[in-house]
Image 1 (tube, one colour):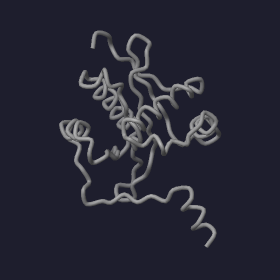
Image 2: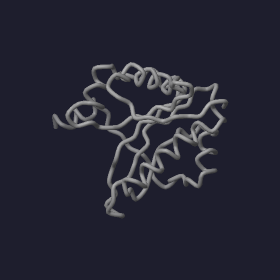
Image 3: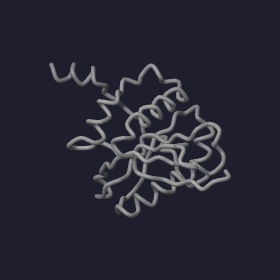
Image 4: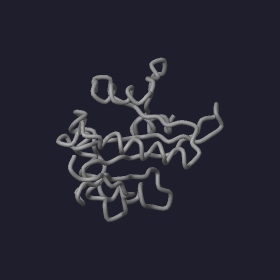
Length: 161
């Protein structure tokens, strides 16, 4: 990488860029068919009255080359909030050049600044490059845990019972 990576918090005017990166990570994860987010939904969810997450972009020469979406959760066991990394995506042509590591280290620092007790994320089990990268940093897989999800349709069905 010839130029330095700069990382900055996304602003409301970045919504089209945020949606573009969401679509890029969805394509990489072979999940494009699941993207229903729109600019309006993102505006309300990220910049409305109660933002649900935050977004940062990594730039090289003022061009966005990476993004991360994160939010804070809470652990009853440790009695502290944690930082949950929802997405971390680096453009394919810049992978392996330290961009992902710098983005992750930025979020590690943010978690420490916020006095978080831990930082967590999920990775698809077939994504060996990401798994190896995270392990090289000392991250441990939580293999004994199974993730469950109620999607919006399931939430509606439960609510009507």
